[in-house]
Length: 265
Ligand code: DGL
Image (cartoon, helix red, strand yellow):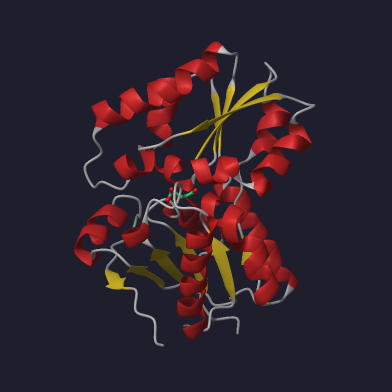
């Protein structure tokens, strides 16, 4: 059981921001990463659709006998983790916008949250926001079109910059000094977002917190891989494997290949 892999998935490349944190913190773990690229973006698709995709990906992971699953996607976590937890007993770790650390660190008392429309509209997010709304003013902004730009191998910097300016400038004008990256894709272009927001704006995401939570859960169940070797990391996609190999390679420090996501029925 300790050498069993951990499944990590996202609608596309975004979850690599979390996969990197997991691999850094738990280097001996064997990891399976699924980029559900044929169905990206999840943001505007609606909860029933996302729940069905999560269910399909869970089947894939169960066929590979994983010991835990990380939903490296805020939108999928908001739409599906409660339902998945009712059905499956293995550890399921999700990600949600890092409003708590942002609220603790903001000096102006104004926090901006960038996320998908699906995350912002979800009950899970609304209740998270309500927990902190007495402590800080929270401004939310859905970012249509941004995930699609990040899913391209060649980032169109001009278009990305223009879009980000439109999303971020009104938040800064309202006094936000802290921005939460509430979608794992946005963390892949964190440096770019920092450039646009300016050096005085604090940018927070949840990548390392998710990795630490995974470590806690594995430790509690005594299933941390005790091996001395670096774990194997395998990549799968529902999209075009050649294209995804080029895209995912941009955000992963070791050589990778991508296999098609095949699920036995
Ligand atoms: N990376 C995802 C998230 O964290 C989903 C982006 C999308 O597919 O819309 O929400």
